[in-house]
Image 1 (cartoon, rainbow, N blue to C red):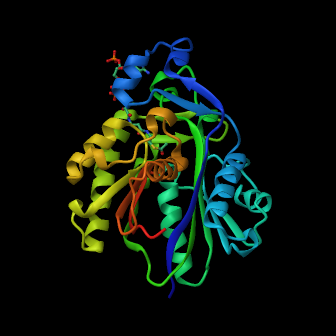
Image 2 (image 1 turned 180 degrees about the vertical axis):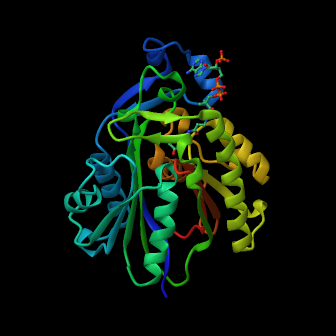
Amino acid sequence: MTGARITGWGTALPDKVLSNVDLESMMDTSDEWIRERTGISERRIGGLTSTLAIEAGQQAIERAGVDPASVDLLILATSSADQIMPATGPTVQNELGLNCGAFDLNAACSGFVYGLINGFGMAAIGYERVLVIGSDILTSYLDFDDRGTAILFGDGAGAVMLEPAETTTLLGSDLGSDGSTRHLLYIDHGGHLKMKGKEVFRHAVRAMVDSCQKSLDQAGLHPDDIAVIVPHQANIRILDSACAKLGIPIEKAAKVLDRTGNTSAGSVPLALADALAKDWIKPGDNVLFTGFGAGMTWGSAIIRWDA
Ligand code: ACO
């Protein structure tokens, strides 16, 4: 069995900014309401899941300094694939010059955490370089007459490269799902994103807290041992509430949602890259990743930083 560690990361956001003030002219809402209820000021919109994934993946490959031809596997977490078939992973594989298997993983906003844990699992059975990308363009499924959903989402992508390590840096992990709540958040073929916001909120906090606690227990760690928490960026009040219940100060939470909105599978790696750019994460730090999303799905992972 082989250990793995993160050796590179990258991000991509579309150029076009859609601010809360822009939304005021499109629907009955206000910048103040959106900021107070969600923590979001603006989001980026546009692009394709594949083009954003390629940009983020390219950066991760370059930062890790690996030869694209030496990558053994690409996992693309997305719920907004370019087409129903084929999967978008092979398009990204081809454009990045990879010579390996590639597949899409759909766990909605939990997708990156699912992909990360799967990446470590594949590394353990000998896949030496695993590129994990989260990329989504959920704004293309929004109904801009529905102010309860249209204000929340943005488009974006992030990626990490996993490479061999003497011992694994994945100290604890947990994945969960509950299909009985699938009606709370969904997109039908040809339809718009539909959500029961209040219920998603309630489930999200409980699922993330329970999952993080399971990962902490598995790792034999206490919340005080976590240097940085990298949560899914859905709503600042969800982050506040989950951190308070976990006993992790909100100051330790990576945050980009004020600038990006909820970018679904892109959100956790975008927040990770922001924390790294701010020098929040040092070698030896315990970093707690967590996400939740449609399905409902949720997950968490604790990684000892060794990049
Ligand atoms: N602007 C102004 N007023 C609004 C808006 C808006 N954009 N949206 C709703 N309102 C109004 C409502 O109509 C309601 O008015 P009323 O009291 O006259 O009926 C009032 O504001 C309160 O509405 P609520 O829906 O109760 O507002 P809430 O505080 O629950 O916030 C929100 C709504 C922001 C959607 C919140 O519930 C939330 O963030 N939920 C979680 C959503 C989430 O995380 N989704 C992503 C999941 S991840 C994935 O897989 C994609």
